[in-house]
Image (cartoon, rainbow, N blue to C red; front, top):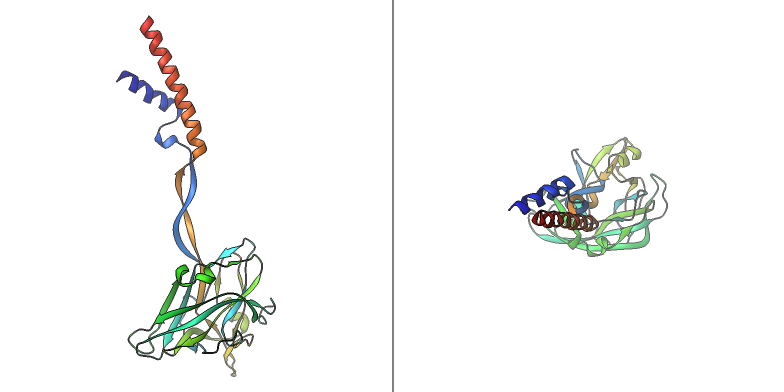
Length: 260
């Protein structure tokens, strides 16, 4: 008993109690972080039907440019939708393509396909009811497997719709194309370059006057992990060495006391 007390006292003097072990940061599941989200905190006062066309020029989407801290992985996409069908199911395709340029209010999708996935959905029981479609990595096997490069322009858009008369909701009535791209919220150094429909740049849903510019309610990003404590293996080695020395010192003192 006396030996155990001395041992724990020695640990305390060395600062090697359980809370004194070395720790490092590892990761655990975190919260969704949007690279581009839009528009948020506003009334989505319109919608644009998703075309059944299957070519890259038949589209609803926007062009963007990544920040400098890539590569960036997309593991979720959120689309805010509506449907004229009372109930039913359908599908459409989401594309990550290149752009034809990186000039604001000019960039549209290029023919370069980086990744694309076809996704399925079910509509609410009442026609015209807005609903959100949140797609995880498992729903986006090709897109989630692709990494966006740093400081590179891309486009994200939807088409190839089938069933249930699906539409992508939008904010409309903005005074200019600059107002439209500013309506998107961005993080990680991303910028929105342009909103387009059927690959027409600087999209407006009304020619006016006044002209009404619009943005689509389509967001994408990643899940940012939060650090949690984990024992540092290198710290454990140092702790064991110090504990071994402490035990040796205590044993020598015990033997000297026995001889006295």
